[in-house]
Length: 157
Length: 427
Image (cartoon, rainbow over the protein chains, first blue to last red):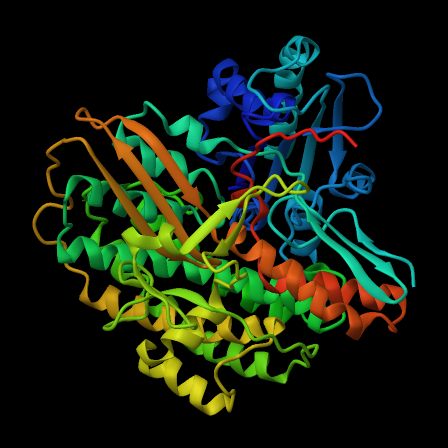
């Protein structure tokens, strides 16, 4: 049996950073049948850091749902492979060492175990302090849920 | 050489920068710029019920939530005049072992070792020595597993309450950790050996070391606050010896002693003051290392963390073997108005809390002094002392040596930014 993990990443108190876990939560409500399958493991994490590595244990595929910031229109859905994620990482001024991209790179250096990683990046508008998603992100949510459902079904094939 | 400036320090928790202003080859200005926003936790805590405090303060830090829970719980227990059961106390020590293990393993291997091996990051280290990084991640993960077994999850665990714990963890889940902990003890001993092979930059400072001291155990919870200059205070007397003040360039307060000295808290302070209370394996590792105490080189904090990693694995094994839930996990609280202080040793150093509560158990006042706020003025003073040694180095090397010094303290900037008083000065 193919096992996959659906992982929503982001902090609930940093504006659109919450888009990842929120999208996973809504997908779960909208597609309870897929979300309830025994081969699907669902995780939500505010700031996974290195613990993300452990979420890849014993799965064949993983979908990370995370907010991203590039120059696209807020609410844009980026569907990326692991290799494509690199283009979103270079400009970070953050001093927190372990972003998602770094952790994925570290995993590749440490293990040969193949995990088919897909990333759903949600273009954020603002990641300031405070709860609540921007309107454009809110409007994009139904589309994000559809995209996530499709990615899950692709991995389970 | 121009001034040394690092706009965003890497491999530290939180956001801060470093500035060393030079004039005629001398440091004229040194600032650790702490621009991470202030957190206002002490404000959030007002008018909250005391039982909420351990879980709210845990959120101050993702690396050392247990330290915040413990200092808060002890402070509030002191306010109520409550003493927890010996079994709950042992479980608190075990939980603290988990936090030390994960925090120290992370810092030794992923945050500081890259500096000593000339690597830009742990990623580069992983490319060259994947086995070392795998070992580091396993060492760290065992600490996380221990926290999960006691507190339900490894980041921001729950279960600690004022009076003890909400419930006893499952005995099997605790005992099942034993084989991993035994592996970890050996790996921690290897870590000390590795730490002794590194070449540390030279810097010797006559520090005032401050740590919690307990006559019967390695000081982590309870005891007196001891200074290497001879000052010994009870936890309740802490604020008579150590004072916090605001400085312009920092969203974190800075601490000093009543005689206006800077001081150091953390692994070096603990090891130098409390080495006699180390458990046998850790004591033996220290003796065999040939390291002379007191260690006065801040870069060598890594060695102290290594020895402590051995100690906390050893203590965890002992406590897991002895673990036997007995009676209620917590004592019943009788609410009354009061005031209490609590201090425990976070992996980064002494963490002090004080609360005033009313007759309904609602918090009226909260004060939290994190370890990094106490170390910040000391780090700046160290950088002053370091500058003459690095001034003739190529700029990149000088910058790296200064950054490495800051990192060797394992500063937790997110924890330290707890208060901001705005002061606008006209020039």
